[in-house]
Amino acid sequence: MAPPAGVTTRYRLGDQLAVTGIGLDLDRLGRVDDLWTAYLDGAATEDLERDRDELDHLAGGLIAAIEIAAESVARLRSMLEATDEEELEFAMQQIFDRYPDVVRDSRERLADLLAEYSFRGAAIDACAFLENQLPDERRDVEKKRKKLAAGELQPGDLGARARCALSGAKLGASALVVVMTGGAAAPIVVSGAIAVMDLAQTWEEGCGALAGGIWSRLSHA
Image 1 (cartoon, rainbow, N blue to C red):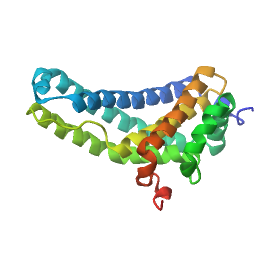
Image 2 (tube, rainbow, N blue to C red; image 1 turned 30 degrees about the horizontal axis):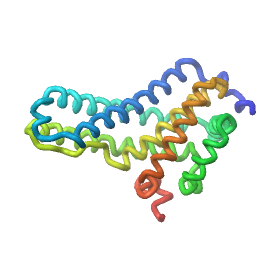
Image 3 (tube, helix red, strand yellow; image 1 turned 90 degrees about the horizontal axis):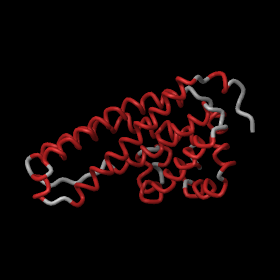
């Protein structure tokens, strides 16, 4: 399947680098939040005193990751909106053609979402949700940081809807890189397949039950 006309000349290396950087920003947020959550889920009061400086550094790193991700999803949304539906469907088809069994399973798990949205539309709405939600998440971490410094145990983790939307935005970034490279680079297509599977797994682990708070067309479910 040949890429849509003009794709290979429309996007330059700088565009590819920019959207790759956005994907890394989103990955970093997820990974730092994973570490934050894993520590706080197992921490005791005495751990907070022992690890005071490191924990404060971790909280600061999570706040910085949220701030960077908030800027990145705003850029990503604009880029996705400027990308034709046909181009994103081409990208997804490259992923499906290379990994048909894996992606078929993911599509089945995401049937409710894909009944209302294209992959492009789902990614755009996920980005829009994060633009609105991440400032609140930042404020929540700042409050927890102060309480932890005072020796009060706190739960970790970004809000469940934010984690869910993050998977949708990451899929958008991965698919956009496939678009920009014409779908020929195998490692980039692999990354796209992983992003599809990540969203499907996240959906089954609870995202699907609260998806109406992110994707408005599902709010009736």
